[in-house]
Length: 257
Image 1 (cartoon, rainbow, N blue to C red):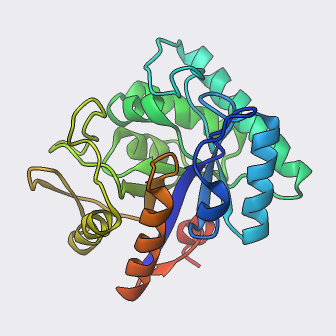
Image 2 (image 1 turned 135 degrees about the vertical axis):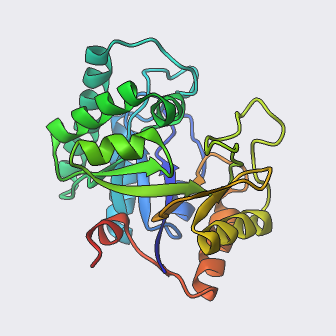
Image 3 (image 1 turned 180 degrees about the horizontal axis):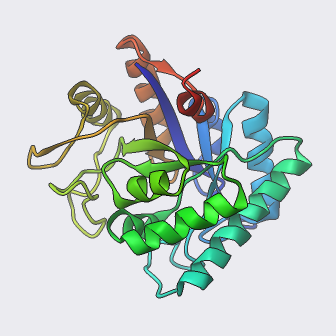
């Protein structure tokens, strides 16, 4: 199977660092780069873009609610126009930085609370996708599998790649187990690999209670801010390749080339 491995990166701000982007970019095939909403600043963005370009890693914008203090994990009551403006401002910022490095943004993946809400609220999902299409209809949407965001992206005419999470547990309806619960995270490289391989074999999301939701799967995410993110990503890549999967940038998954 052809599969993408991605991580959320560039999540530092000023002198504060989050995760090991250098190490992660040696492992993953695509990077979702924070663009000022929940993390990231122009200097962090440019450094992360440069590292990704040098390693042949495809670049995506990772827009969020404007919530630096809460790391974008708190829901905010924005109007459709306000949300459109946030998406445009954040994706546009990263696109400008990428141009300075003679490269470009090729996909968009919403972050945190915004992504979670778009999975279940079709109106929010439509607003996000309408914004992305207006910015560049050629941008790929990286969306959680079996979500309203997938449906909205296709309805908007975007190329959509469905994503599963290596380090997060699922509810029976396909949503992520809330981080407030003790069982929200899958811990350890071996457990994450087993979780992913089971879903790839079943071609389905597998919830904590065993419920299966059939879905295409094109990408696997490892959260770059997890303490063991590098170890998990490295073990995942090796395990996926050993199982016969080819790991490719998101642009190649989306194009089918």
